[in-house]
Structures are given as structure tokens and as C-alpha cells.
Image (tube, rainbow, N blue to C red; front, top):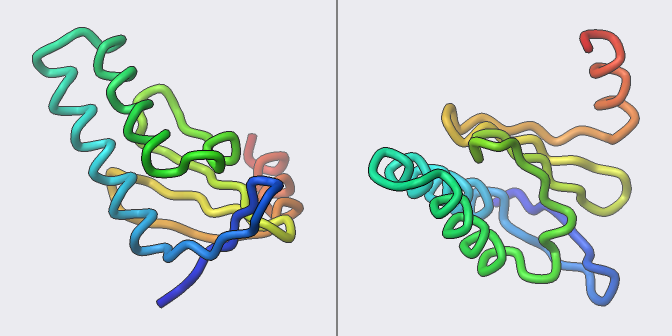
Length: 106
């Protein structure tokens, strides 16, 4: 089982990547189902509550797009975990490599 290390400034944590991706996929699924029958703002608030429940004090290290499809988690030692909740694909890479890719293709 692959582990992703995150730190909230108090205590480092080892999180299992499959648990992270499963949780984010479920949050995305809940959000998509919700916006089909309710206002996006209400659905986002529900999804934000789920993210808070999932990550707690680590949440400032979790970034996402407006549709809750793409996520980037900042880990320890300059490592990022990028995840697409629609396709289920993820990659871990160093921040420097991510910046190089963004500058090259952005």
C-alpha cells in the first residue's frame, strides 16, 4: 500500500493513497449528484464539509478546482499528489517538476 506523507505543522501523518483517492472520488460523486437537483453553492458547502471531515487540520494543503474534479495535495519534502476524481488517475511529483511542467505547457 502506497503512503503519502502530509504535515499540518503539529504532527506528520502517513495517509494511504488508495484511501485518499477513494474519499475524494466519493466527494466528487456526491457533489455531481447534488448539483443535478440543487443549487451549486449548497452542494459546494456540503462537499466542503466532507473535505473538512476527511482532512481536518490538513485541509489547507488540499487544493481543488471549482467542480471538485481535480485535486492537488501538498505533502512533506516538497512532494505533490495530483488526482483526477473523474478518471481515478493520480501522480506524485516534486514541486520543482510540477512548476517546470506548468511553465512549459502553461
